[in-house]
Image (tube, rainbow, N blue to C red; front, side, top):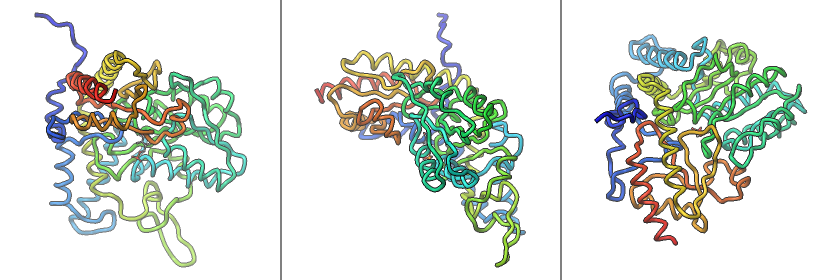
Length: 412
Ligand SMILES: *Cc1c(COP(=O)(O)O)cnc(C)c1O
């Protein structure tokens, strides 16, 4: 029989064998992991790379003359180049290791923010994660800057006419999420970047939810900063990336002082090291950096276009099945969305539903997803969120839908 179902152009069952956690049971059931928006599972190559580093190669980097120090330094710097190539950054020193997206955004707020003055404006959106809200509020308090918020419509899309009205020569920075962790909305960042550059402002893209789903090319995007976390892209926790254009990073003052970030220290005056070290004070998360390189190498074996198509299909399928339940409302119905399905059910608290799903081995997230202003906009306490990765399957969604049916019967 000829099948015209070519919608899964890569071998999901083979991919699943790379991820040990996917094969465990939870509460006596096969785990179904739909909490990829919070963190992804790790492939065996990454887990092995962590063990390998601490078993054979552990040393502090950058200053040692001895063999292991040089080996660890080479591996760490090789990882930086893997990441540089992956996001198509022009220079490796434009790729800074941080603790994650939150740390990357705080770095920009604290360093670039030092150059801002009273009355300067920063634009974010109504769908931002708290880590792309609070650092800017803190900066505004310190510096007397003004925070403006692009509103969204009921579908969870940015109202671009309102963005146009907020933009002015006072705009110093627009900091915006590429994909919403709560709604799945894919924002028109190309348009935002172009318009912001036209008035002379900078743009930071929060890529925490896009790097694992969409091919990122920072030169094609022409963004000034791009931030992401390793742990959401199949790497370890506690490590992430801030890409920044060299000419901007060069103007920015260091954010933290300490070892590694200096050229020369005396008690009279300290001069700072060059990029990227200027922004990497102290002993970094060496194994984290190396293993992020491993994760990115692993991911680059796949066709991101195929991954994106697979995940979008999963989200569409889940939505279609979920909408068959009475009183269920999807939160986030943007025309351009992917990999995330958030929903509420009339009269049922998301937490109760999440708890019953967990009893059946299904990991979803419930709550505000670090986007409280968005919950306020929709006037809901929280949602149940299923977020997919390329290792998820339609069969898992079928099991999830049956578990939903059972759970709703118990709660109603
Ligand atoms: C997860 C997430 C963050 C924060 O990432 P951390 O790894 O917790 O620093 C920021 N923005 C978005 C859109 C996220 O999904």
